[in-house]
Every structure is written in structure tokens, then in C-alpha cells.
Image (cartoon, rainbow, N blue to C red; front, side, top):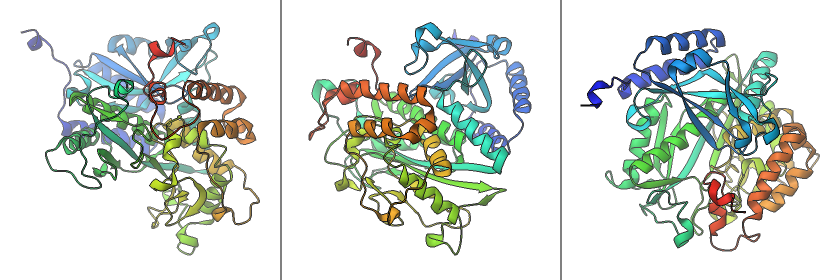
Length: 476
């Protein structure tokens, strides 16, 4: 009887897709922020079936945070939403804890009520410092500022698409229980492109793809990956900030669908030794006036001079930014050459052991693929590091730079050392944010065995920034 009294928004998947694609088109066409804000506020005011707005933001390590604001309160106070930044790892110290959340009204999503709850909509937030400027620890804000400035100054649109691999394991919260058995249990051992229509892995992939489609992801393909119980669900290119937001939503949806099935979707880069790890191949390009600036029909591998300069800067700073692209202790297990791992700092159209690959493309699809990215890295940090480095970084005077015998580190301590010594990472992040990020990674590394060894250790799962258990961490 009680449920009959409720009248909360619950739209069909077809209606959700229509609304989300319309919002996506507004982002693509860069509709003025004040016009989008006005439209969203009117919608929230008029739509009586919405009870709350879920605001999403990410911390310095890329961990997603969500909080619900009562709709009526949000409509009155959206320009003064304060929160305690000292409670967020990598944000402010306790003495300077007050931060504010701004609303990025263009990043507004309608989500399926059967997975997110009836009467709710989602929107990404922007962290604002006490003085009203974008907060330097909010890498999403740094990325958005950088992308907008390039558009204003050069007319550049930064485009990205990510191939995000993950594992589906038996049992809920399998990562948190890993220390009990020191193993993960597969739900499927079929392998690449293989699963029966009704098995758990296929059901998980199908359900996740349906939710993504409803949220305007514009899916392309999905399939089981090479390793047992591994999956990949691909979707279309997008402007860089939206692309990074979609990575956060992708992982959120995967985890929610898996939990509803009594399973765990894991984005640890190498949860099981002896099989292929999970990557997040990051495909990037730059366009201007709808023209792909990475395409040149007469260029080497059809990549333009601008594109090759972009690649050369990435290769130059490969070791400097490795910690930003591979942000956990576990990530360095994946950089193993025996499993198609991209641990060589070189570029190639065919060699999948190369950090950068130049896929076959045309005037629409030509792109650069950065393969040495782990799926647990902050998507905002990845996009910011890749694009800013590719556009503004240095080019080393190394003989045969694109094919030189150079390798990424095989452990987080060497990656930390490279990151801290590099002048480029200070320019990239600023000294304060660089130091805070380095300290967070050092603390995680120090809670794990220094030598990786031949099997996954409990601490590298327990103290992983995405698995992160605050109670356990505070026991130290």
C-alpha cells in the first residue's frame, strides 16, 4: 500500500536514451553554460516526480564520491553547496577543510530507476576552493579548464574513447574478502569472444550494455576478453571531459549490475597472475572545425605531423607520467611482456608491446592509442596527463626515439622515483598537488610487500585506492 502512494520518476530505457542523447548533443554543440543551467533548473522545478539529485565528484586518486541533495534544497542552494574537504583523501588539510561543489549542468544524466532508484537524476560536480576558483586537487576541473582554453585559443576539441577491461568474479565484495582465501573465483572460463547466451558473464555484459545504452553511451561492441571471466564493453568517442565522466559511470554501472547478481566487477589491473591483465587503452585525437587533425593521407601510417609530434612528446615523458597512468601497486604486475603488456616506450602500428600504437584509421577515425594505461587510474588524470603532455611536453633528443630500447618501470617504487624527479610533472600538476599525489601513492606502496613476487598479495588488494577500506587503513 505504501508504494502506491509514491510517484517517483521511472522512465523506460527508450525514454532515458532519448533524453541522454539530447543532453549529449548539447555538450557536443557547446551550448552556453547559462542556457543549459536555465533549462535544467526549469526541468527540475517542473518535474514533480524527482525527489533528489545525485552529485558525483572524484578525489585526487580518481575514487568516485556521490551524495544526494534533496531536489527542493538543491534548487534553492545549488550555488552554495559546501562540504568537508579534509574527509576526502588527497584534498584539503583539516585546518582548511571547507570546499564547495559547483554543478556542471551540462554533465547531467537520467539513469534507470531499477538500478539507481526512482525519482533521481545524476549530475557531475566541480570542486571549488574558498576563494571561488577551481580547486587544484580536483583534476576533473583542471582537465575541463585545460580543454576549454585550448578550444578558445586554438579551436581544438580534444576527443577520447577508452577500451576498459575488467573481471567478473564470484561473490559480492570479492576484493574485500580476498585476504581470506587469497584467490578470486571465475564465473566463466571460456576465453576471448566466447560465452554461452545465458551464462553469468554474458548476462552481466548484456545487462550492463543495456544500462549504458539507456544513459546515452552509444555502444559499439561488447565481448568476453582473452582472460577467463574478463569483459570489455566499448562505446563511442566523445569530448575529453565527457569521455572521462563516462569511464566513472561505466565502472559504477558495472559494479552495480554485478552486485545485483551477487558477483563482483573488478578493475584491478592484474588480479590473477598467469593470465592477461586488464588495461584501459586510451584512444585520442584532436579536431578543429570537425576536421581530424591527426589524419594525413600522405603521412607515415596516415598520421599527421601534429599527430607524430604528439606521440614523440608522450614517448619522451613516458617514465615521468607512468605513475599517473598506472596508479597502484597491482598495476605493475600488468606491465609484463609475456602477456601482450605495453611496457616498451616506443610507437608502432602493430607491436602491442609498445606504449603507443597507431591503429589503422581514416579521415574520421585516425587516432593515437596509449596502451600503457590501467583501468584503475583516475580517468581525469589520464586524460589530463596524455593531452597536456602530447600538446605541451618536451621532445627528447634520443636517437630513433620511436623505436629506442626503453622500458616502463616494473614496480611502483621506480615509478614514484621517476614521477618525483621529473620537472615535467611539476609543470603538469603544480608542486602542491604533485607532492600530495606522490604521498598517497607512497603510503599505499609502503603497506604492501616491496617485491611483487609471483602471486597477488592481500595488501595490494586491501590498500588499493578503489577497494580502499577506511576502517582498515586507519588501524595503522
